[in-house]
Amino acid sequence: MDFTIEFYETAGGVCPVRDFLNGLSASDPGDFASVMAGLAKLRNRQYHREPLSKSIGGGLFELRHVGKLNTRILWFFVKGRRIIAVHAIRNKARSIALRDRQTALERMQDWLTRI
Image (cartoon, rainbow, N blue to C red):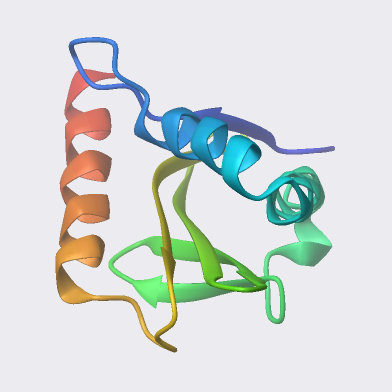
């Protein structure tokens, strides 16, 4: 059985990951295609580990794509074989900045309190 992938939306209807992906599609179509392929692979549980995916603590995971810039989609699991993508970033660093991790955790908590 496959997992479904959903994007976090704020109470006001803003979808940060979708907005990020739309911008990536316009600025770097090659990386966009690779990230979308990675998201599609996450539907299969065999890809829920390295090198495609990795736990970053606090219930969060990252989908990693290495290109001109490292592209990361931060996500978490919920019951019913669902994956919720909450934050997306591009950077040159090997690690995720504390503020990005905090943003993802806040969005995860927001999502969990509103379901």
